[in-house]
Length: 460
Ligand SMILES: *Cc1c(COP(=O)(O)O)cnc(C)c1O
Image 1 (cartoon, rainbow, N blue to C red):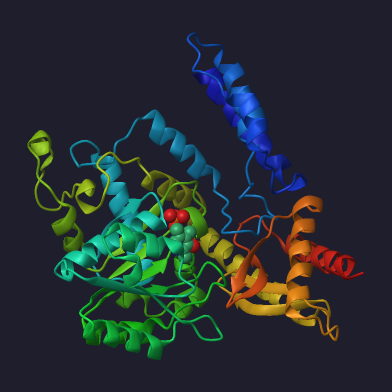
Image 2: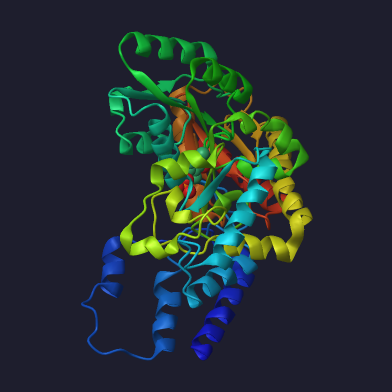
């Protein structure tokens, strides 16, 4: 085990060192991978080092390198090394963070980490929650709680903007909201939910016999980083008696910076907030988080006393975290957060999050000055959207889409960077999400320059 772990550690470090010189993406068609990997499980084993080397050579490289300094696609994420090692330790110690009896130390560390998150958001003492597999799972657990509070209505409906992540709609379906009762509320020119349209949708649904279960606000959409009008939505939810869930899976950890905390003002008024430490808190997958304003709401829905677990009840102030969500057996996700924050300190995390926002702002300024690039959505929480649209060329929308698809393809095949696209109210857009802590301005600038070059080629 020691020899294998040493070799694994050396290979992992070598990979990090060579990453910037490699392409941010690699992948292979299914036939190719089947040729390499499809077989019956071997009856007899072979040397562990050989298996390790095959995994490192054939399997692990076939991925988008989400931690590459030039990975700007989707939501990239670059874990800190103490977090990576923490996952190894959590497996090696075989922790099951289910109950206090089974894992008191890990449970306490999870409570500590949740308390940090609570303070960053400005949430009250009464709040609490749990770490989850991700933002999607957090959303499901939040809607289960919301359904309970709403009295398990027969005809539930939920509300979210047309920019909301599909995780919210999927969670609604899981808790029994029909697809036809998921209301997509339109957004304004800044991709923020339209309050008038929300109020109309709720009133119409109530008149038609629906019971609103929850309203979802975005604290950083995954297309543009837009933040919904959190205070206005909280006022509305308060007046209407509807659960407010804030999906802060993308943007929530901006709250650790002064600027981000101003931008996210109002998040502390939500009934529940979903976060994703495996995004902007630089943790390896998986770790998400759900915080609920009154933690008892979760325990009322998810708490069960079973005979086989009767020994695990320690009484007041010794929560069994399995009583707050879906999972009984749970990995020790809090350790990676705790170890990386203890190692680097909050000042380093604050600098890293601020850097993402500053680089996006700098990219916005570059795009504004470029004669080839057009800004489509200004920098918001580390994201910026643009397309190639040369000044004075007067290109038709259809041509522009073709040109920009070609630019995206050229970046994909001919450049180290990885960028992904989105559709902004129907317009094709190239989207930069700049939150890796090792990304520098040169990484962003050279990728923007490549886009300008590929754009000129496409038009030549
Ligand atoms: C990533 C993301 C989700 C989904 O979270 P997972 O951790 O992938 O389950 C939901 N909402 C937003 C805004 C996201 O960025």
